[in-house]
Image (cartoon, rainbow, N blue to C red; front, side):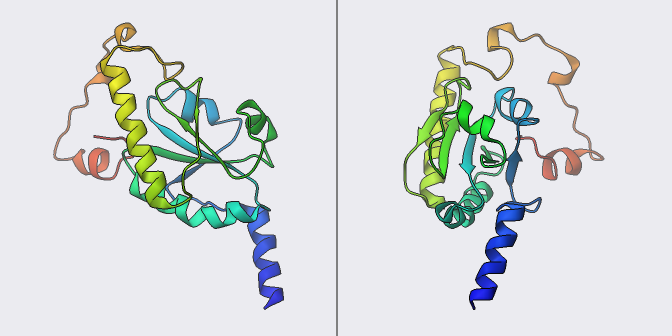
Amino acid sequence: MKFILLVTLIIGSTYGFYNDDDYVVELTPSNFDSEVLESKELWLIEFYAPWCGHCSSLAPEWKKAADNLQGLASIGAVNADAHPSLGSKYGVQGFPTIKIFGFDKSNPKPYNGARSADAITDAAMKAVREMVEDRKSGKKGGGGGQSRKEEKSSSDDVVTLTDSNFRELVLEGKETW
């Protein structure tokens, strides 16, 4: 029994908690800005360390929350042990730390609620609602590209759906429709 636990801990600390089968996006310094800061989506990001017991306990709930929020908000994870620059940049002092990157990407909000999929999902939905209200009121966010008033129309703004591309773009695509 102790051997199995030891092997599980070693494998977990080597490979992290998340993989390509999850809806959790592994974030690193090389993809953080393009995925999170330059997007217009709401992001909930867990900063974790593979050796952290609380992080290990959170992982299944984080995956459930990511599954619940698919298409509504993005869920990410940063191995702050492997990428301390990201943890430091966002004031991470312990693990796990959860930050909500909403309308103002330059000012993420801490999440201090329960570590359950339901509570995390509820917090995300509240943050989405706040984000919509901020957009409606014309507030300018920090990050996320151009503000609404600065946007220029382009041919990329309109997607023509046909019988041949509907499944690929809408049903199987990662974009929110």
